[in-house]
Image (cartoon, rainbow, N blue to C red):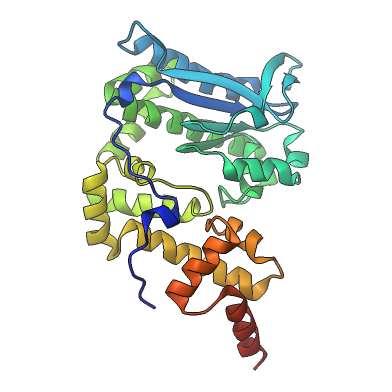
Length: 316
């Protein structure tokens, strides 16, 4: 079914032209749980520390790194070293968020308060350190399963992937050369692999970048998303991103996002007993009133009427 353009205010889109982006402090959070890997969390923190040393500024740090935990206070790593953390609830807006594993992360994956916080938090980059992927998967932020049979290999791979994500953020803010220098200082023995990955990301075609941004929209559709966020994923200006997205995908980013959210909404209405307000939150529609307004406009029917009709159809 074709969809008309979506009003930006309805879908949570916002346009911003951050001309002074390189003069703003980027906030980076690393979420810790008891038994976390000090090496994994420390490497991510060191990436941004090295970037601050390389940055050409005398007035402030480009990156501000903070450690967070569920309730704040001291958190002990796997070697019993304690790290002081702030409470999760005291923060909600970051340029990057990394979740470290540990023995406490499995219990956290079943804590609705923590998974809800992760879904609400506003961030452009999210990464897992070791078993931190368990919590991100429980929150629906990443999709791949957790494999116990190759735990050591998984942790090493996740560590490298998290470093790559941190380096890509530095590349976006400070340039490719700065990211390469950080990689070389951080891990001399594996820096060639990381530098090659940075170069490959920079050589993606415009179509590949748009498809990567489309994947990001699908994976983050339940959260507030801005045009600026999606354009940054594609490493394009907002104007060029909007034009290229329409050419590549056949619809505007707003239309594409709406189709995804409506699909999720329809599935939840048909397959679950969740109330309309909760479905609206889970599908990124905001609240029940907003969902009902959009649903009537696009589907010509109320959410409740759709639920009744879809179930009646399945019964037949």
